Image (cartoon, rainbow, N blue to C red; front, side):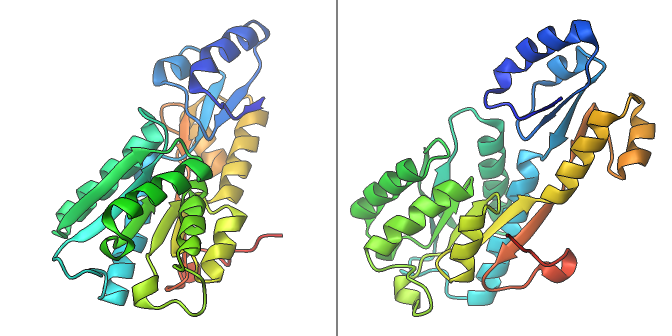
Length: 262
């Protein structure tokens, strides 16, 4: 069984139902707690580490800062940032945001966090949040928008378009705010290609699918053996897939492979 949990709290119910039959379960995308995974020898997880996406996202942000050298749009000496976060107490949302804040601090970039509201991964909520923040501080006082996922980043871009920002080829520094997301969904990739959004990171989905399928169809439980089978480290019943980076200002494809959506 391959299961994408909408609510990780349901993992125990799934295991309780399947355990008497001895079925193999591979959870992907949303990770159950470690004690739940450990409670059943045939349960595994394939996905990503929230911190890793924050690390990869920051690498794009850092590259953008080096590339543009004009990121302090209002010249106040700070990088004025709006964070668009997932739901409250989400390990993915918390991990991504906290990792980025830590890396900004390590790079000694002075940061002014305008807001970091929980927009629950939703485009319309992010749209409304950004509208409220810009009406409060003014678009000229926002240097960057960092979203925990692409859907919220898309909501941000759609609002920016309504005020004449991030409209595409004719972008100017005065009417462009860099927007970064996570997930690499097709709509975000298209926005990046059209210079309306700046960058995204996403798990190597081909590897995620391959590893999930191998784990689901194998009877092995030894982690060293499974590592040899999948070519990815299996540790604590989990496989963490690395992230791919994509942006409109730097070509990262040489490090991985060309990106194509059909």
